[in-house]
Length: 461
Image: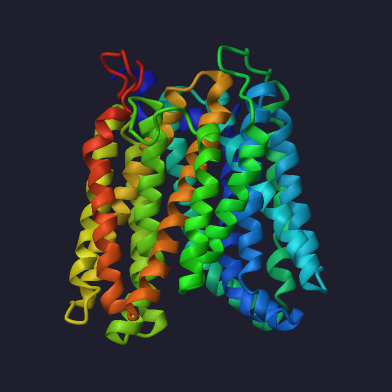
């Protein structure tokens, strides 16, 4: 290993004088988006009670999701055409404006406007940040960058709910939004110097994609409906979910690279892997507290402990892979799928009424380790195999696969619950489907390698 390949050299690539502000700005911006996402869940009961909109409880989440999907697609198109310079400034400011509007809301309508702005800012920021990483950081440093990004979600996951609850009780739910506005301005100021010198990417074959805007609109409606269905365990929710899929299928033909559904070699499998990993992990993550509380009588506080264990394992594995940039990423992707699939399969020993509830802790730690390896590998492979004029499109496709896979599977879980009646009866059925999807990822991970290349799984020297 040469001096240029040492871990200290990689750290210098992230925190040296030329990139320190950019790295901190990226991590801070993602942390703020994550904190808002985690904190709003805790504040929402007080919020809707104050605004008198209990019947509209799901809509602040649905409006955020719909706006995020639409902005993710438009942000990817914008970055591919003109580079990430403007989106990286506009999107966090839009997110901050949404925080300000929501934080000063006196009606549910104003709150929903704020949530739309937040969702649009968060969706566009996520794409623009990935395009910035591709433009600014050398390939060898990217695993470490993705490790930092994963860690940026862990602290908000641990502290977001209790801090949000404390702020809501001692001050007001308004400050759950308003307290983040100054930090958004700081994060924006930190990334501006990095984007100032960027130039638009050269336009190549396939840079012009027709029908993207209508498809993005249809996808946002479909994902919003799936998000609503996932929060309502009823037959109506199942019908809405089916109708949403009917709307989404033609839209995704435009928004996904060709070959995603058949695991085409290279980028199609990378995009599909993002959806499979997110769908399996986050669906069980959503139903695990219900499994432990309703079936085994755990308190809600105790039922949340496996989620914390999984988040910490995710962060640890992601940091570890960032310190080993020479490991083949397709191999890590397969190991990651194995971890998530084993963790999901372990829930078959927890979910039934005869299950052993404490097994949720070790198995969900294994799943978290798998996500730390798999998610970071997907991100690396996505940038490695994308031309400059396609990075935004591929990134937005991967994020939509993430959102769509999660929404569909959580909605399916709600439908199964409505049909079978109890978590002890319904969740083993859902988990069995998720394990099958995980196995598809395990056996398909090798197809994430770039076609026509002898070895694209390791980083260039």
